[in-house]
Amino acid sequence: MTFDGNLDILQSEILKYVCASKRCGENRLFLNVEETHTCICISKFLKFSYSAKQELKDLQTMNNDAQFARDTARSELGQLERRVYEERKKREMELLEVRKEAEEKRLQHERIEKRIVSLAT
Image (cartoon, rainbow, N blue to C red):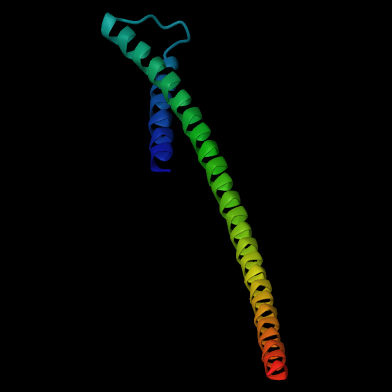
């Protein structure tokens, strides 16, 4: 955020300088090579600053997209984890029921065997 604000301030200062220079005349001739170089540098800087601002906006958009994707993935993962937990709990309950039934049948068979043995003797 500060980078963007500082860039705006710097651009406005440069534009004030350029506008002040143009007030002297639209077809103003540069008096020396140094002044020509300064204007070329200012022009390059303005182009760079506009491209830097656009790159910053692109990166912010990319960051927002990445955060949205991350949040969506976290949400989906949470839902899947809850589903897996519920299914595991259900399987454990079913297994417990099957074990209980098996134990009851085993005890029932033992009783039947004892009766058969006691009747045979």
